[in-house]
Image (cartoon, rainbow, N blue to C red; front, side, top):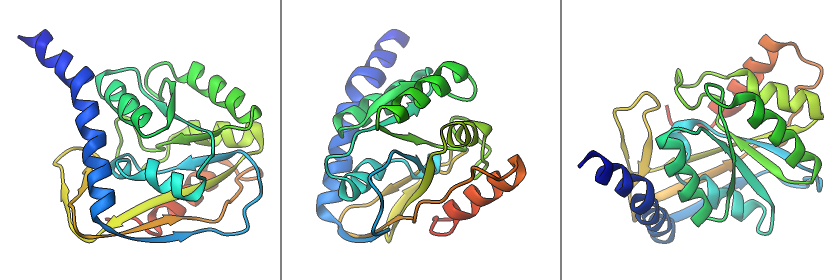
Amino acid sequence: MKNVKIYILINIMPFFLQLVVRFVYLTSKKRFHHCVDIKDESLLVAMWHGDLLMQALNYRKFRKNGKIKVIVSQHKDGIIIRKVCKYLGVLDIQGSSSKGGIRALLNAMKEIQKGVDVAITPDGPRGPRFSVAKGIIAIAQKTNTRIIALNSIPSRYWKLKSWDQFVIPKPFGIIDFYISEPFSITNLNLADSKELIKNKLLMNSLK
């Protein structure tokens, strides 16, 4: 019975989740607050773990034909996220701060060198909520890559009782989508880098 449940979670649920994402997106009024005059460059795409659900479509509005891969963990939740993202046109880089981290960082750097944007949740996969792990800082500084912060704020939503307070927008509401101007942390120390990333992401976050 346990194996059946895991099979459903990993192989069936992602298909229906991406349908939910598309349905919510299509039935919502959308307001985009995106940065302008951005260079044709690879970017690190940062978002909070609890604000993941609509970000693939937020990014696609920003870069319709952009190439992007997301760093996801190798545990069960990561597999589900990876498959949902794939349905929405975002491929993955396996690994996280807790498992497979070094491989994920190295692969992310290689993708950036190829001209691919890399998405990462600084507080994932286990939190604490609104924290910033070292991974995004290492990638940004070693590759001299700028960061953009993605947020979505729905007018109507469910909030799960999970560590990240995962947000699920309700259909037929209003969603404000935000993408910040690119910013650099190349010359900042660890503490200042964490603070800047956190502040950029909190600027338009649903608390």
